[in-house]
Image (tube, rainbow, N blue to C red; front, top):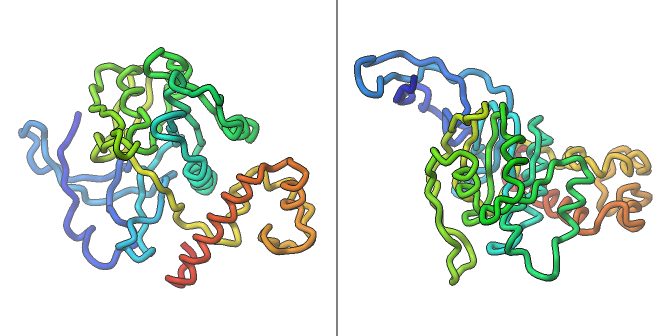
Length: 295
């Protein structure tokens, strides 16, 4: 049974570090107000502790001090990238997978619009994510490529789909479960970006078991609650090299005798991957300098 609930006012009072009190996937206690309405109505009295979550820094207006929880109590986060129009963003995937590592959520990568890939071929970076142990699935809403594999990955899991507008999240879900009838839109020629067709994160039950949340399109992702000194721990490909660093507190940046930088020189870690780490490290340090908070 579905209930239409509002959040109790006292839960929203006072200073908050979280943008929204309750999000998709939350388990709550609520008080029935009118069971005879259609749908029945209630009031959320308590949000129960979260098993997992995926969070990012809220908009700049928050001053870097407010957490935006995109979804709670999920098993896996599914980053959807189109291989063409709009162009894929490795940096976005890097940061989302860091957040997945941080919060103990499985990271999945979907490469959509495979039928539109140009003659230059696929970026070898995507194979690298597979080598790191992430599940990578090539799909095409046009030809049906990879849909059975995608459906299997989602079965009996609680999943969040996330990616920029226009990458085809809603189109893929409509093909996997036509009854959802999610709105889709095309990429605009002027900007090369998609228009927002999903306006809020909403959780849907899947016929094969499990739940899926389709999130509004986002292009940037700044992970929440990561200390700059810990960020290297969430890059699994740094683990072997870190053991060869001269300093236990090595940040893999300017220090001498750094095992991670040595792996980059030797080609064990791609240069673009180390650069993604350095950019994230810089952003986290700037946030700490600006707010004085290790979030």
